[in-house]
Amino acid sequence: MGFGWNFDNSYARLSDTFYASVGLHPVSNPEIVVFNNPLAKELGLDSNALQSEEGVQILAGNKAPEGSFPMAQAYAGHQFGYFTMLGDGRALLYGEQITPENERFDIQLKGAGRTPFSRGGDGRAALGPMLREYIISEAMHALGIPTTRSLAVVSTGEKIIRETDLPGAILTRVAASHIRVGTFQFVANWGTYEDLQSLASYTIIRHYTDIPNSDNQYLYLLQEVIRKQAELIAKWQLVGFIHGVMNTDNMAISGESIDFGPCAFMDVYHPETVFSSIDTHGRYAYGNQPKMGLWNLARFAETLVPLLDDDEEKAIEIAQGQISQYMGLYEKHWLSGMRAKLGLFDEEEQDKALADELLSIMQKHRADYTNTFRALTVGKLESLPIHGTDEFDKWLQKWEERRGRQPQSIEESYELMRNSNPAVIPRNHRVEEALEAAVNEGDFSVMERLLAALADPYDYSSGANEEYCILPKNPDRPYRTFCGT
Ligand code: AMP
Ligand code: MG
Image (cartoon, rainbow, N blue to C red):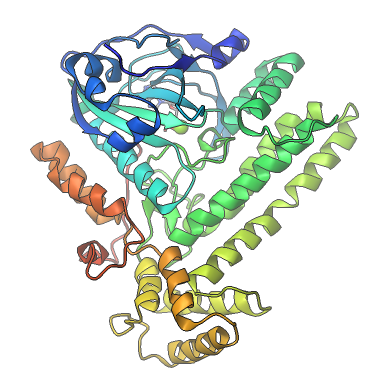
């Protein structure tokens, strides 16, 4: 059958230190529970063929597609600060699909069974967490945030054993690549100098082809990775996204968001918001994410030291020089995004103070982050808990004056806001509700409706998706999402 597969396996052409080729672990009764038609099309894949009985076998890891080279990638990582060897313990990379537009995307199955890197694990994934990754990654994409994507989730028909028995599932993940900070850490620790050079050169060819052909291309690699992460994490902050597990193995060198485990969007604005039940010390709290990005990038920079200069001291100095750029870049992206959220086109000195003041009013009165910007965007402020307070009235006046000082009309300013402030986000209680219906009742319609709303997050046409703006009944209860294992 013609599925449209067009694999190249460039990663397999690297030294086999970087991966282990793996066999398949068929599952008994695979069924597609969600499939991404638009993404299949972009990849040059035939949706009908992939959803046929033969296609499902491929998405379940029962039968390898033509031209694939099933492998598990090796990587290490700092998990909550502690360094350890990891690797794909439950993921299988089929290869790189070359699209009709000549783009290259990893096609990976998550939950496809044991690999040489599984340690004590079963190599499997549960349906709930795989659907969560599908929902969140597609929502992030629609929000305009660089991210890995999800082509399909297949239920396996098998139970996996956790605290209770759970239905098993496999996610087909699509990524610019799966090269992580942890991949570099693995090579820096256990590979040779040549391995490190080869990984860095491969990464440049794969993601950073614009790098000038100078004698220090690895310095540019470091610079570009820092630039992309600063931009990415600013985008997370601007929509209130909390990744939950920003370990170095969960930071992609491509600049895509990756590995959506216990992640969620913040409701009430508070920098200390934590969603993950395993993040007991708040290491990856909302307000810490920019700093944790810096921490991870410093680990990345360390791996590149041997490539930056023959003189180690000089190399460290070069690396530090690059790392010291990050916070400024992050703040620049954040502020420019914040200006857009406030309908500001030009720059004034006090803009950061204006934004910070709004955030602190929101924090004090426990205002919802997304709905506050939404209300400002549509000009309906009455429903906000900050409405009618002295501080907010004063702030509104400053904001109006500020908007009045720019040449653009108020209508243009509102248009900018509509394009910058999502009207809907995947609120955790709605995601949970969709997962519960799917996992416990076999009812996927709740998720389908949610996915449809999230596909168009900047749609402000009258009444569109207003039901998804409703806050959880008990917003004081801290949400805890659980790790996707
Ligand atoms: P994650 O939490 O998905 O980022 O995974 C962290 C590490 O644990 C990775 O090396 C995974 O491959 C591994 N891992 C997670 N769950 C399992 C599992 N059920 N079986 C084997 N390895 C796993
Ligand atoms: Mg991971």
